Length: 299
Image 1 (cartoon, rainbow, N blue to C red):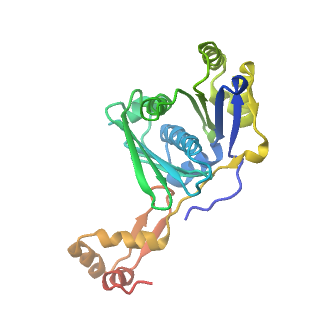
Image 2 (spheres, helix red, strand yellow):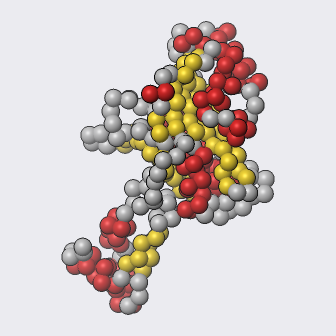
């Protein structure tokens, strides 16, 4: 399992426009940098995963706060050279994700080109006690993630939404990453909506703001002109990169191998390695481990 620890990542809640807009914002740079290091992500892969993970944690917070253990997963698959981008988040701020081709390089760091647009965004929500998945799917409109997720919310959830995402890469790693989701309530007037749209257009790029400011100050900078007010900091939610993999889970995956192939691994006399795509953790299994699995006597 990927080691976790205290980070500066967090999710903050607020209102704008005199209560006409709900605002949820997340700072995720530490979590994305940890993912970059453990999964050896290229800059464009880190940017794509950063946008997707930030979107997932923001969407998770839109779920029913009274029901614990809910989670959201996003899968962006647009036929681009980066391959599928997968992001998962729980309502309490745990995130993890992976990229199909994590070493893909693009000197322009063009996320839209790397993900592509010939495909879909799939969103899966699960809630206890049955954890029955609720799946929605929309066509990708840009591959840039923000427009795609906003399109999903408008199409599948019927919620007018503005979504800002930003990732700043430097030679030393991920310098800034975060996002802001802004949703209007049904009673909001056109004039107020236009004022918020103008505030967003006039604001500096979110990645630039987050490179200099903590998330609550960055949101205030973007929405200060429309009366942004942060809720009490006691409502803040820490965010951490947390992978659920384990040696036992990795071993169980070998149950799905064809019997002949599993038998060849056991008879070959050499160790087998399994790598978690979400955190890069490597698990080594001996032929005896696999034999125990085959016989149902694994430890």
